[in-house]
Length: 125
Image (tube, rainbow, N blue to C red):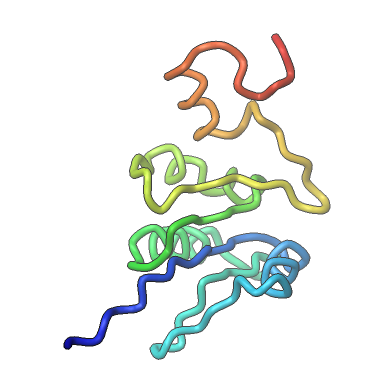
């Protein structure tokens, strides 16, 4: 009987050090045999190209089901986020310690709102 492939799905995280560290402590971190991780810590030395490359890698890598990205980082690559249309991996914009979540900047939430109409944020209009 052939051996079954590992069917587990991973989360990928792109964010500041505190955000990524929190997810790593919760057990989200993974480094595969090619030494590729499922996270990117964004700091003052991180270029926009590095963020774009990580987002492209995570959204195209087999085995990743959800990409969580701090909203302020997503704003740095907003055009790329807005162009992303696939349902899997899902892209979720999350708050960070220094940057609160703004539902008006979340392009995924805007698409959902457009599809269903009305207020999907729970904040009223």
